View 1 (tube, rainbow, N blue to C red):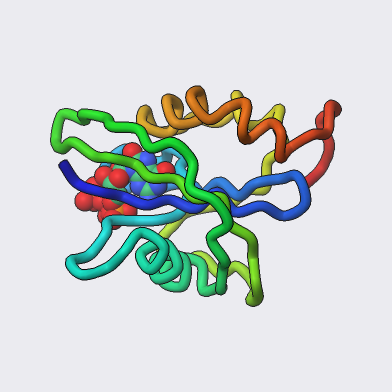
View 2 (view 1 turned 60 degrees about the horizontal axis):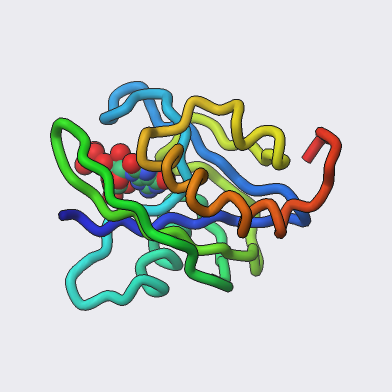
Length: 139
Ligand SMILES: Nc1nc2c([nH]c(=O)n2[C@@H]2O[C@H](COP(=O)(O)OP(=O)(O)OP(=O)(O)O)[C@@H](O)[C@H]2O)c(=O)[nH]1
């Protein structure tokens, strides 16, 4: 079981989603930025490092949400999500195709990876509490 941390980065009441490249596993699907935990690293260290590498910004992890386990044909992962806030920097994608800030309505509309769909389902009430706006709006 591979442990993967991901960051649900908030800006106001919107969160950041990133799209995988065409050459990766699960091409063009959406995910939260993050990656595999390295030996000797705790989850918070992992997510801060991965976000520096992938987005070139500094974040602060605020809360760990419920993890999900998922079996893909090629591997099994435990996906560990952290609610995070941006501390400084401008997002620059080093690995992903696109990024988008989404409101609560957007959560249901993206073509997420399977593990993320499950992750969003089990953490929905916690996330919606942090994304209170009722109307769709530009993030
Ligand atoms: N970063 C990230 N990875 C996720 C998410 N959901 C999900 O299923 N994954 C999977 O978790 C693994 C994360 O690996 P990684 O980010 O370190 O490296 P990678 O995409 O190059 O992995 P690869 O070994 O499949 O090519 C990938 O298999 C990816 O498909 C997510 O929200 N964020």
